[in-house]
Image 1 (cartoon, one colour):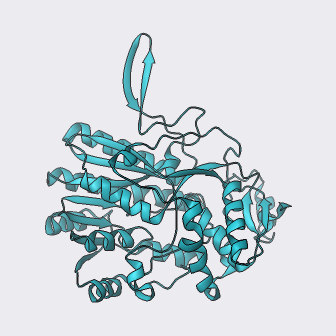
Image 2 (tube, one colour):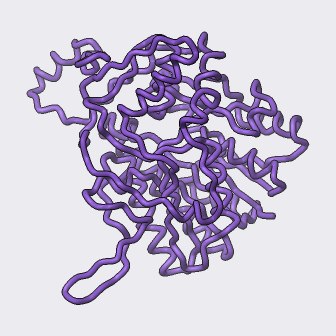
Image 3 (cartoon, one colour):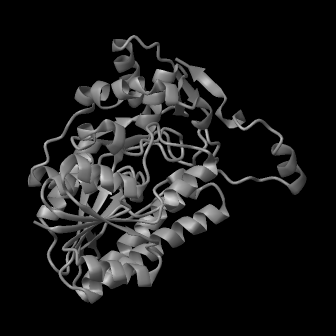
Length: 410
């Protein structure tokens, strides 16, 4: 059994991961400073299901399972706090979810971009130094498939064999991210790779696709008290979660542009299994290991159609609206990412076609009275303004939903 320290243990994936490891007999601690709750308050958004405060969640888990989760409240950018937590808990495995998790949030403004990079990069640097001072820890860090961007070649798992001027080498795969958030993940990867080479740290970098779902085996033990923070707004909610809520709420699914953007996806239960496989099969000392963590690839347009077909089975009339894309990204592109290593360790994927109805839509239907449609569109435009100051002032008077005006409805 491991001593598993879950950083970001109050979050969408952190809390389910803490319960998952605890239920399987591992000693578990959670770390969080509740920054994300403050960011949610800033934007006026909230999870679909009510989420108790961390202390209450830990108490509720103990009442349901009989198992104790240790709780540490503080900021990962604070060295004294990080050092104390690591020396007190003495983890053998650290699962790192403790970062600002949203690409759109990082693109709101200069201040949001800087905060994202400082929070994420400095926090991970503090963890690196805590691991240097306490040898024997394996870090499982949540990366993102978005670090790679959309190159016009196959995406390998972390590394690429290069042939150049008659010589060859195995080098980190080139990264072309599309947001300051994804750039922070790239900086994390570079810092961790360096630390593995210099200080013989053991790190597994999970380049995760888009996660969907609400329910896990642990949340089902008491859905009223153990639910995770399922978001559906376009800043903190993933695209499939947003589509499912829009379908239930009776508003068109907002597909950006033509909807040809292709990404990797996986069910929340598969995410937990991937993290477990990484913990149970740790990287070696000095190894910076990279797994591409997803199970299926879809275009956004294909996702919308999946939700529309699933909604029909529940009697929902689901429409799709193509809206102007507020992001700066290719809408038609080549995308073929390898994801073999976790399958080789024993991952048995759950397919979207088998899980969408029960894992998301039915639960959203049960809680449809809590949906706040007005919070879905958050108006984050990634494209720079090219306007004189007076034009910017005039633009401020334009209704907030102007950019999202439908182009084509289906």
